[in-house]
Image (tube, rainbow, N blue to C red; front, side):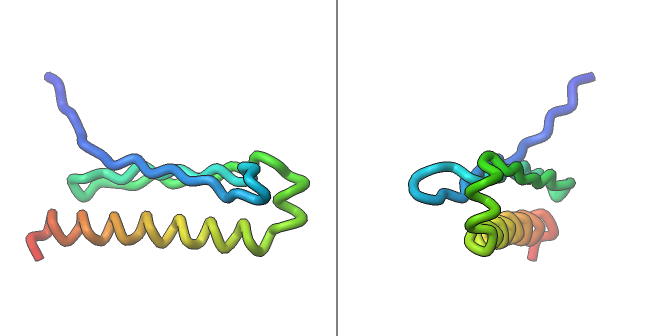
Length: 79
């Protein structure tokens, strides 16, 4: 039996001087299931030099993921 799941995929890059430094991705289930969320440093030297800005971008990305999760959870729970 085939069982399918619908999800929302979100990706982002923390950019320094037009160069991608941190890649972020998230996959959010639209049926109230689990979320996978990860980040990967693409340029270690630029990351180390700009750690605060990169971490701010990671936090902003996480906030967007949380907003999507909250929106979906409200729809699933009917509130």
